[in-house]
Image 1: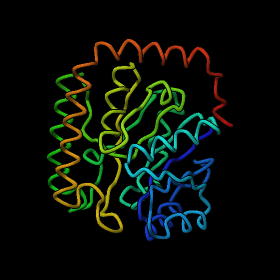
Image 2: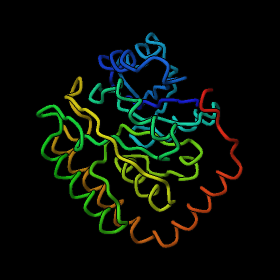
Image 3: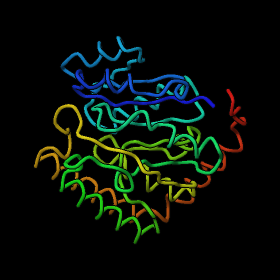
Image 4: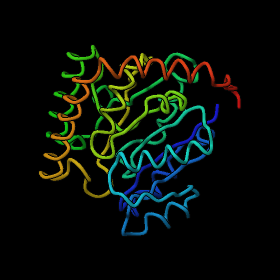
Length: 253
C-alpha cells in the first residue's frame, strides 16, 4: 500500500526537521511539505531533511492542503496522511491512523487528541471549547461521533478526491469530516498524543486567530448543513464511481 504524507508548513524552519525525522521507517513512501509562503528557512530545511517541497503562495491551511493533493495526483498513492509541521503531533504514531485503512476497517481515520494523551497546556482552553462545540453540532446535524477536529488524519486517496474538497482556510478539517459523513465513508477515530508545538500556534495561539478560526468553523457548519441534502447524494455517487474505477491496491506494495 503506497502512502504519501502531506505537511502544510508556514514558517516552521525550526520544527520541520524534527517532524520529518520522527516519521516511522517503512510507513511512508513520500513526504510532501507544502511551503505556504514561509519567510524563513522552512523550504530549505525540509529539502535538507529529505522531503519533497512544493510551494503554495496563497496563505491558508486549506490552500496548502489542496496544493498537496494536486501534487499527490501525480503520484497516485493509496493513502494520504495529513499532519502539522509544528511538531505538536507525534509523527511516530502514524501507523495508528494507517493500520485501520490497511486492514480495510475504515476509509477515513482521525487522530483524536481528546481520546489520546495531550500534554498539559498543549490544547489551549479556547481550542478545547471550540472542539466540543463543533463536534456537538456535527453530532446533532449529521449523527457524527467525532470528538476532535485534529489535523493528524489519514484517508484513502481515491475517497479524498471524491470528497471534492473546497475550503482554503480554517474550515478545511471540519469540511473534510462533514463531507466524509455525507459520502458514507467508514470513519474511525483513534487516540493520538499531542504536545506543545515548536513556536506559537498559527491559529489558536492568539485571540484574533481563535476568533477567526471559530467564526469560519461555525460558518462552515451552517453553510454545509443548509446544503447537505443536495451535496450528500452527489458525494456518495462520486465515491461509488471512484471505487468502481480504481484498481485494487496491493497491501504489500
